[in-house]
Image 1 (cartoon, rainbow, N blue to C red):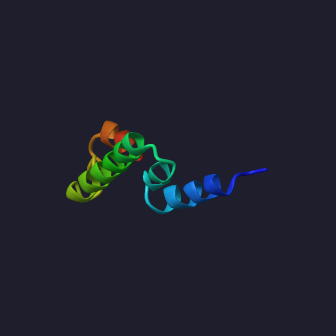
Image 2 (cartoon, one colour; image 1 turned 60 degrees about the horizontal axis):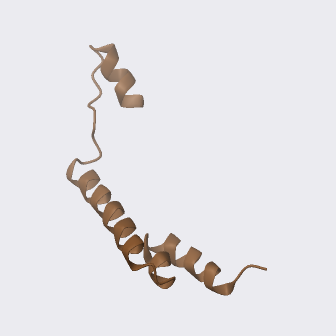
Image 3 (cartoon, one colour; image 1 turned 180 degrees about the vertical axis):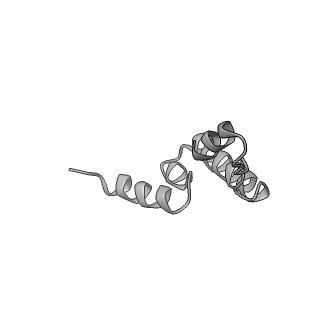
Length: 67
């Protein structure tokens, strides 16, 4: 039988990364997960979703764009 606390942690972790760990009183792990996801999201917004620009002149940049 699945514990109700585990189901709540699953839902909270899906809602906000790290919140499920916080609900299970694993504070350090929850803070690390939240910090990493928040930092990666912030960096993605700052880079405007562009890691590689799509240039048709260089075939290697086309491969990097799709990877």
